[in-house]
Every structure is written in structure tokens, then in C-alpha cells.
Length: 259
Image (cartoon, rainbow, N blue to C red; front, top):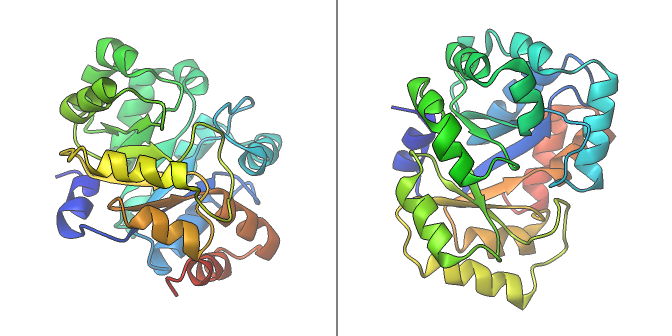
């Protein structure tokens, strides 16, 4: 069974997933950050593949991507850094990146390499669901990769139902707003209504909420309406300021009331 499915089978609430950008703040720290996050009690990790034009990301992750690319990070280098990660890391690992560099590497070759490494899923924000179904789904299935699809407050209910019914395992990534990533102090009534509305659809797939979670208020508001939360920008900021992934995750957990 895919590790993502195992996680959601064994843990129904309060799942914590952390995003970080591979190659930032140090070019060769990808594996060490992953191991620190697992030590820190994180349930799942999203490894960001840096891209020069990350449209869904705010300034924190954009800057991280720029630094990583300048430091030499690439698809090939990331896969090399992850080559022996399953020697000791047990939790689900997802690569989150944009379609262009993956296609440049070769989607089939990328999927096969991910399978060999032990990657459990992919998040490709600029890959439309229909295009995934028509051109990439068979390959992802062949190599046991869950393609995690995103929904926003503007996503039509019919589309949400289709993603819920047709996607292959994994979870639905609920983006807290239609804007880019970035920490927020609180979620307003409109966002909380969105969380409750999707919760009320009684979807069969588990849901994770991301974008904007950085403190107790935002964590609790999201966790109340999903299986768990995804935190990126706040962790990336802490990792850059503290230069120590163990301290960064400990500080983050304290910030959200999970210490």
C-alpha cells in the first residue's frame, strides 16, 4: 500500500505535513532536512522542486526557489540527493513542482525514478485534472505515484466531486484561498465558510488544508475541517533564519500549539 494511504488509514485527524524547497538554504541539505522533519514528528513531507516562475507561490517560496536554483538545484540533482532516502526515512514523501522542468526531464523517466527512490506522490499545481487524466495518469499509476489535486474556494462543486471520485488514492489538497502561498495571522469568515462547505460535501477522499497556516489560530481553524494541515512558507522562513531544521520544526510546532 502507498505510504500516503497508510498514513490516512492509521491517522484520521491532526496530520501535519511540511513543505520545504529542496536546495534551500543550503544546496546539499535536502536529505538532512527530511530526516530532521521526521525526527520532529512530522507525518508527511512535501519536497519542493524549485522553478524559475512558481505562479502559485508567494514571495517566501519564490525567494527560496531562486536561491535553490542559483545554488545549482535541478530535477536531476534532487533525485540524486534522494537516492538513498528510504534507507531510514519511513514517512510519506511527495515532490511538489511545476510541469515544465518535469517534462524537460521526461515525465515517464521522472515517474520511474520517483518509484525507484520511494516517492509516494506528486503535486503539480499547473497540471489541469483533465490533462492529467488524458496524458499522465496511466504513467503515474504504473509507477505507484498518487497525483494530488488542488481545489480552491472558487472550484466548482462538480469539479470537486469529479476529483474526489476519479483521483487515485492520496488526498485532496484544499488551498485556503485563491491567492498565492504565504503565512497569515488568521482566516476570515469567508475562508472558514469554505472549509465548512467542503467538509459538508462528505467527500470520500481525506483532505489537507494548506496556504497561510502559521500560528495557533490558523492551524486550529484548518484542522477543525480536515484531516490535517500543510505548512510551507512559515517553515521556510524559520529554516532560513535559524539555519537548523531541528530547531525550525520545533519552533514551528510551538507556534501552532503542537509542541
